[in-house]
Length: 334
Image (cartoon, rainbow, N blue to C red):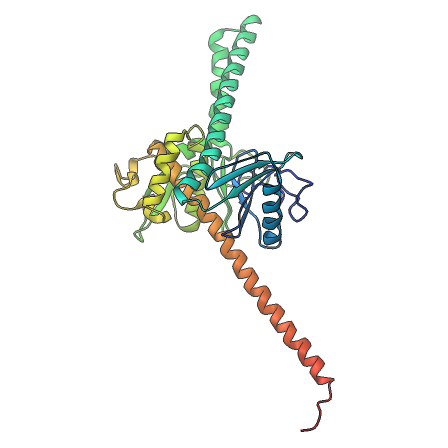
């Protein structure tokens, strides 16, 4: 089991309660579906746990959930807090809209509150710089330009979203480029992300030169890029009303392509001039939800393929072992 979040790369924490899953401070499980997640306490995203010890962990979590008195339950979702500090989220026979609203409402709401606090702190810091410079006799006009100059460089040249590729350099865009990205029609009747990208730089460098030519990114790379862009433009979005409206959109269009660029969708309005960041807030959240779920489905499909390979390999070795035993066994004459 990985120890860092797949989405924000922060440490998932540890616990001494569940022997088969010592990772995480909040564990969510769905016994009926055989699903198990570690919920990141930093970004509130749900990290799907590999199959290895999933069933044993779900059984242990079920016992712990019922044995603790510090729990709150509805017909569909339960939350239990153990004395050791571990939190267990038990998913019952929830209808998908209710479960999605609960799950993503927690994630998006926490992100929104955190970013609003960061923005308020940055504003206070800027006022402090101006006040300190004025006390030293520096002109207010000169001081006031310092934060703007810093922000311009920081937002135009820093790597904010990175999409690795096997056969080409990674796609890297800045915060400013993320706000200028658009969803457009692709030549194959699909959709693409049209954006300028940062030029390749030294490995490990956080800053790049800005590219000057728009590029159309398609296929799986476009989905990864869109997920990263949405994480930027949705950072102040996520009220309860917006999340509920986003869940309704996902229910109506549960496929990525149909939601992102289907007929009648906001991306079709205004042609290629509609910036992703200017699309309706609930629509942007709906796209982010569906792309997150798509990533989970891909991870689950990969696990199934690996299990199938492991089973075939075990079967092959078993046949070899059985053959070696039979070669040394003298069968009785008929």
